[in-house]
Length: 262
Image 1 (cartoon, rainbow, N blue to C red):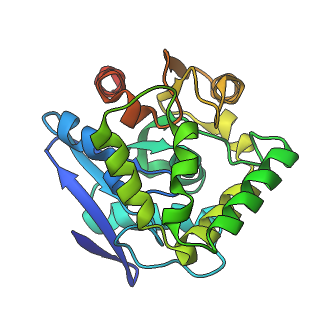
Image 2 (spheres, rainbow, N blue to C red):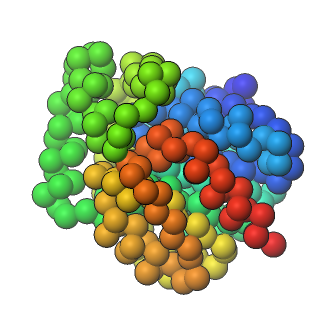
Image 3 (spheres, rainbow, N blue to C red):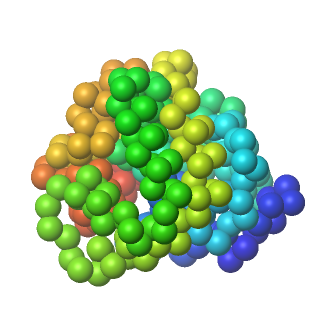
């Protein structure tokens, strides 16, 4: 489904009915990464997974875009769909984006679920790590994705995953567009959302894999410490793409949490 959001085409996948649950994917990805959540939670929620600007079937973002631009696009989508308040769940970049949405548009957020999340790279990682990640990805975006996507898989998963999961991730990454990824990379590398954490006044769940090497446990614990009354769940033996590596456990924790939200 393609939605016009302030003159930009935004692609969404949608299933179910109930209170809206809006899913924000990570970088090098699109809404297809939420396949197990669309199927597993649609019995109780109106589950919506977007393709961020520049990803999947959505139109590209301008060459220079900040987190505020992505956050405004989320708010625009919520308005275009007439969703009112949403449970907002983001993975990795999407988790940081959820915080940016809360900072700019708190009235549309009913609850936050931050999965494998950062307070932006600048807000969670040492400068040398940010530089190394950014330089690596910028170099790879100059080449066809087929030449480099497999080198990322060990950082996404802590253990063996079904072949169909690997096929899904590869198929998504093969569609990565450099024109869409570069602005997202620059925005997130520069983002420091730590000042947002103490302002969060909605129920918040943090879900991280305890074997995540990209957003390791200290990153999760810093978010947890910064957001008063938040809950931190560590999925044992799970890596960064926790919604894909452990979809049943992820869905169970998400459902349990959302049922507690007033």
